[in-house]
Amino acid sequence: MSNFPSLETPRLRLREIVSADASALLAIHGNQQAMRWFGMDPITEIAQAQALVDTFAASRTLPNPGIRWGIQYKEHEELLGNCGLFKWNREWKSCSLGFALGQSAFGKGIMSEALQATLVWGVEQMQLNRIEATVHPENQACLKLLERLGFVQEGRLRQAGFWLGEHHDLLQLSLLRAEFEPSSISVP
Image (cartoon, rainbow, N blue to C red; front, top):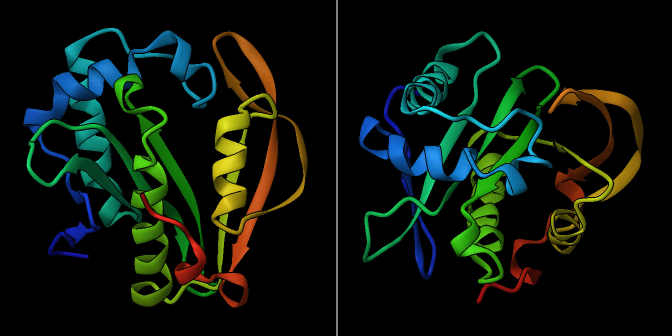
């Protein structure tokens, strides 16, 4: 993945996350309320946001690479959130899905639209057969979104996560290539 693949949807552009996005990442990943579900402690400094930019870029060159897109409206440069595929196991044709959205973009169908493009790209370009997601059991908005996208709950991973000073159970979900129907996903 040397050239970064930008994606477009009816309203959105999914693009590379760059240093200029650090302040937006700080707002997204620094939000205490939103980060209670994300799987990491909220960041508090711009240097941590810049480190996220670097982490997202470096993940493309790991032995099990990943890709993380910044999400923006086509007509604006403002970063609304991010989403991507990581822990790519080429031999097993599987990976994990992750995403975060700024609070001002909640409830507008942005993540549903962005994830549909992400999933299509993963199935077509990465030849994925299985895409996994782990979600906090109380994150009902995320669970509903993933279920609308075709993900199926497989079980509970007991105390699999640790953030905000506590261990957290996570629900394991997956989407299989044979179950994936991008045309059935409604995009606003």
